[in-house]
Image (cartoon, rainbow, N blue to C red; front, top):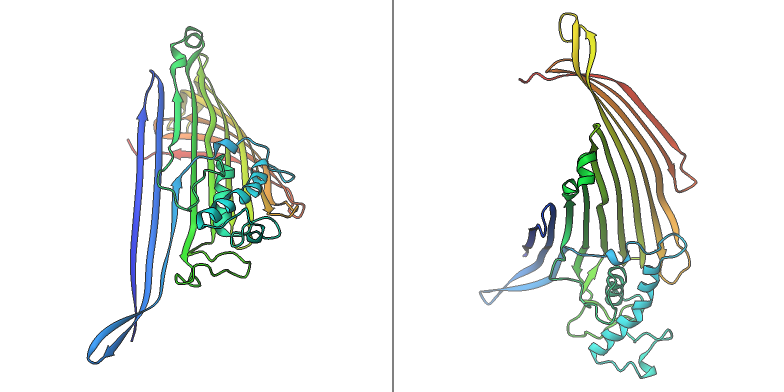
Length: 384
């Protein structure tokens, strides 16, 4: 008789800290860690001389992991389809990490007989998962490869933050010209193991066994790992002048790095977005209309708002030890929006809108696209 035993285990940590070191400066620190682990085991029940014995078959442990991190040290370094300083550092870190792993295992790396043709310790070649993962994390987080943690999991979630400052309105120059003026900045970053699973080919009784590439077999296998980063936003300026002109200027950046252990390449998706919003309120605009009942003169505010945004993103594939970086996707997206709304009554509002988008793709096989939407909407609120 064959049966299956499963066990699910999850650890989830979230924290948030609110700090106000000076008046009108608010800092929110947040962090998280999530480990989801599943254990599955097939077993066979044997009846031996009237006593039941359980024979374990293919025990397997699998799951995923994510933790807040920080890779801001490489956020603004040059990285395009031609070169990437962080990627070059990743490739260079492999030898340092491999030597640390070899010394930890008791291998004499000063003996040429213990090195392969490229100078890596035997069993810890340049394509070993045990070598690649710490090298990747150290390069993109700006850590020293000689000190970075060699295991895949991390214990302490690094805090991310949101910062907002409203103190400009206490200054005479701003108070004279603005109704409000604020600056905002935010940062989010996560390190994620998409899936880890027990290596069924690993034999604890023979830990020195190697795979077809000559690397020591790992007890746990990883499909891929991610480092994500978002400036939400990098900076946002939100203000309204004494003459009722509203201005919102915003810059966002984001980056997603994926290291695949199936083919030993990095996929880098990076984007940035610029946005400018303008608004103005014309007070006490008079319109003669029957929309709200008998023909009469309506006095209400006319609100105008215009937003212009530019979004640019690219997907770059980087191959280890091959000069063959490629842009595989991406686009430049322009968008413009204009709205004008006028309240004919407490419940009835008329809205004119105009939306324009133009996208140009990063690869030659995709054609540019333009979309225009425009119209008038009448919105009636049945509430009081």
